[in-house]
Length: 472
Image (cartoon, rainbow, N blue to C red; front, top):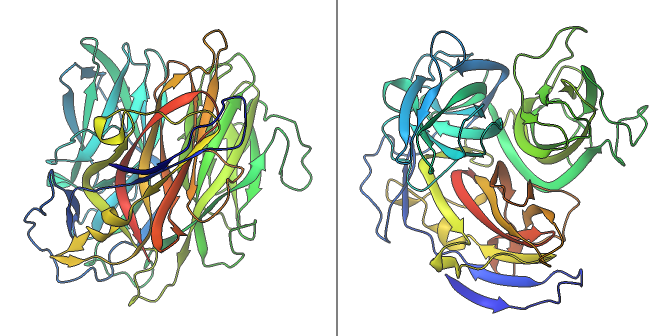
């Protein structure tokens, strides 16, 4: 890792400092089954599944549905150990996912670890693929933690989950909800040809603490127990008004101002009073602040519905991108190419990244140009990319002053824009907090593949595991 420029700052000042670095990626190779990361610098040999991408990489949203729950059906709690304990579950034919493996490139899931009796982390991969260093969900004992995942379909039409508890053996429940799937180049359906991702600069469209809020709703008012809120999407700031916009990728931050446990759901259509959604996007104990990313289909009225289960909860929603249908099949813009296994691109705790946390009110730039250029399809460059979908984990939050407790947040944004009013991860001392994010590249000088990372307070390490790339 080469650090081109590094400027320090007095921690009492709020002007961001900048730290430049260029990401030297391991060589990658991709087939139509997905992207494969290799150790070292030479590309691995990958059997070609097709001579080109074809129509692959289109997203097909589904009404959220639960496809695995270890609390039900006699499955039982899943084992954890310091070495990791793995189990598989079925993807194909579940919750609206086609049963034909030749049609499904990957699935979009919300994975929740519930009631773990020890701290640890969860990794998820296509069945038969190695997890490597990646993690999707980091959790503490007795805390429910969800995260979004884009996972390729592995052997037997399954995904594989590994649970690791570094301090000793334990157990946890695992819950999986499906939100959609990504089609292969072999999929052909004239009725539903799928949608494509359009990454945007993160933009705040809801904040019940101070605004913006939908027309007719007062600001500074949290959602109460069993309350739902209609949030317009089409035509709201960075999202076009057209009917070809089918879904939205949002970061939903919940602030539990009450003392009770609650969960938040995001669905396309209103539901009857007295009923609860069958799925959730985030779970919180009293007083907790928690962010989670969701891909939500847009309802017939151009909006989505947000639901708060209990307590008094403020909601903040940042748009990361949207989905459009009807694009020219001969173009690649917006197609999503998932990884065959997650690739660890950044870990500021490691020697390769100088073991240096990001400081108070600081920004650092990362170039993903080498990473983007190293992606190939059957030995040929895959082409330019507008961004990536990756799991961002904040860890090791340190204080500015030893006696002053601290909490912080990370914001990741394109290299060619100023710091937006948005956040990706909220973190407190002693926590390891993950959140999947759609990260748009920006142009800096002659480099089109730059992202910026901002830390609001204290000093903070972070990790980025890449799960997919978005083509231009």
